Amino acid sequence: MPAEELGPLPAGRHGFSREQVAHHQRERLIAGLAEAVAEKGYAAVTLTDIVKHAKVSRRVFYANFESKEQCFLAAFEVVLDHLNALVAEAVDGVEGWPQQAIAATRAVLTFLAAEPDLARLCLVESRGAGPAVTARFNEAVGEMAPLLRLGRAERPEAERLPDSTEDSTIGSLVSLAHRKVAAGEAKQLGDLLPDCVELVLLPYLGPAEAARHAREQA
Amino acid sequence: MFGNFLHLKYQFRTNGNWRYPGFVRALPGKENRQPPGPEPVSRDAAAADQRRRILEATAELIAEQGYQETTMEEIVRRAKVGYATFYKHYPDKEAAFLALLDAATDRTVGRVEDAYKREEGPWTDRVGAALGVLFEDVAAHPAAARAALVEAVAAVPEAAAKHEAALKRLAPLLRPGRELNPRQAELPESLEETLAGGIVWVLGQRLIAGEADKLRALLPETLEFVLRPYVGEDEAAREAGEVADAISA
Image: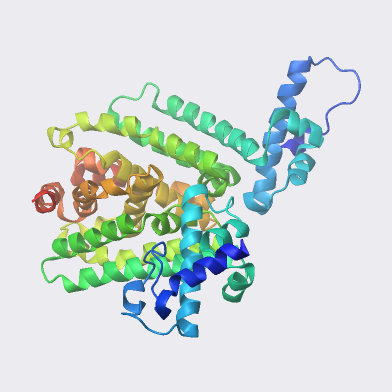
């Protein structure tokens, strides 16, 4: 929820416990950072921008985060958690690896297209937000590899794919999505679904099958 | 610090001979521009050397700690030049970074394009030759490569644009592969740039992991990945196998 919609925290006595207030403040700061980053880009965002959007004091900021980078990392984690939950939900009950891979791809693209600011935060701003975020980005992207690797069981030919197949496939996907978002077309990320499906399935199912699945998504 | 600088300056000029100091490693075109032997230092040569040192220091620092964290102070200290010298060449850190990207991209993409043109065999061989040169260049200049392939993506918008432009220059080398595919009309429009993005990602991951020395082994696999959408999986695996054999021979 955007910090704007939350309004200022009620002053004086209220029914919230200290923990609830602290949790709430942390969430406001994360939302505040996301808004500030959407407004002017991570590099230009100052602490003042973040606390202004979050409508809390600098003291509260420092009670929750050591730095702007740490706050960004927390925001990035929130989005990643959400994406993971969406993917888990999307593949739940879906039969067969190809259909699961398609469902997961669709879930991610649909969410990012609906939240263009978060898409930008995840795919563009995260790449320049310092070493800790870069490391986390690479780790998070790498977590897709085991899901793709399951595709090797689909055909005998797929079992002898080179080790780096998942890496290069993931890199292509990230590059494709990154380019779309960097061009300011995050809302059209859904258009990439057929191409992404083809890229993901190609090594595992072979060109003809991958193309057939891609056409079904067009 | 000033004393240190003078000391170094004279150390290079022993016997009136000018040699590039050992720590100035090759940046674009150095091989061609380096004076062949004892030669008087011209003003131009000295300026070129300063720029080379500044760009080299910028590349190393950015590779070590990222663009945002790198300061002007660190750059001038590592390059062993004064602030005045830095400002004579570049107005700020961003300008030095962008100059570094231009230099690194022109060198590497230029060499990749040359390798593609020089190879006279079938298209698959030409792509293999081009990819081989790309991997070789990245392995030889890991710091500059990391700046161009990893840090450029989000450092500043202009750097990201240069990164994009470099990727776009690789696309025309791949595009002729479409003619080898009976279903060429169905191939995604974005395929070439997307494959280039995949290559850059794999290279970047190895650079981040500090494994530039392992790139050789990765070459056949990456070639297979790139060829597969065009020539099919069997042919791609065969080509990759040939390259792997050539490397281990």
